[in-house]
Length: 266
Image 1 (tube, rainbow, N blue to C red):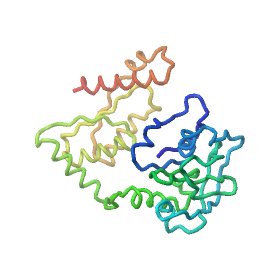
Image 2 (image 1 turned 90 degrees about the horizontal axis):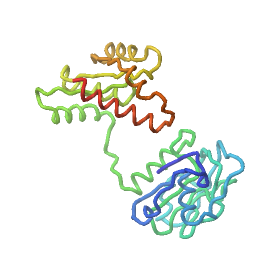
Image 3 (image 1 turned 180 degrees about the vertical axis):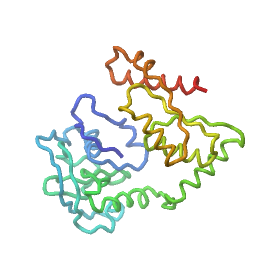
């Protein structure tokens, strides 16, 4: 699944390998990817938009047969949705059928007649599509066969147990922490699992916000009991970034320099 504000006609827009449609895997294309599915079959299926369609719309579902109607099963004949796109489908791709339309999008929702490929022009992942979570459940559970037996409440204890199994009773673990959600959650789990044998470091690259590193250190220590070490490395990072304007090159320089510090700081 993918949604993106780009146009299939823009230079540099993301495109999938068409071989993916022959793998037999189940696909749900959202917004841009719905257009990508149609465009891959025939570019004339998608027209470049002149005005953005943004906001509330109502999609009228079309009953075809029990095999292709599964995406909107149990949702009735009309569903409130949220649209945000420029381009749109103007022709039905070969081998597909319409399973939903709006006032301005005749081919708002499509599915292949034989393959498990679905496309929706709207955004079920947004809360402004009130029943979007039901659509995604229909896709993930009823169509893909995912097992809905995972509970968020079990996650912390399962991960703590897994960490203890992976780390020996005496080993030390060094972990990079940025103050963001992912690394903070990881650090909290490590601290709970192995206590002070987890050593957290934050590398000050010189590109952080004013006082951000010290604020992260204080916050993690006060609320999570994590003794965070801040490594002052701004001079090195900025010297390596001097004269570099390409964002991708900057990203690689920062990444490789962070890796260097993680291996040499110990």
